[in-house]
Image (cartoon, rainbow, N blue to C red; front, side):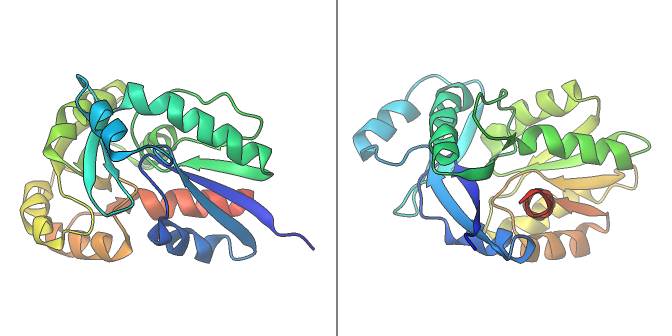
Length: 221
């Protein structure tokens, strides 16, 4: 029996073995295929994209492990192209691996947008709408603040880079506010070990975008 295909679109470049490892426990019988919005582009091309003015910068990870920030409006059409490619390859579901405010993706298969799903889930649990939001970089704080306010919350926003555990203590201290009902690790690069450490230090319930999205995707496929 042919395995079902779950497609993941990174906003940077593939491969992303960390994404496969995060989703595999929730979709054990599916083939998980990761493609990058910037796959096939040279470093010069990527640098030119990164130099364009940005109101909504997103942190992208490249094949060599380097990171560059590129505006959401530049990445959105590239993500849409890769989503459709995965649909044509037979994906039953495509997940955009970013919690930013991406527009709906026109595609021949369902596309899961974490930026829409995460506020819906947090909103269903939250009574006060007072939430802490942790973005991956300082440059994304303003855009995240605007987005979560538009989603109907009273957010406190800070930043802590994925895989950089040395940044957790500072960010967790900012979120250790008894008025903060729940903290959202608002980046698909934050992982479970990050969530555990963050929750321990801040003392608040902490929601991880990566595992929440992976659970839903696993149910679909």
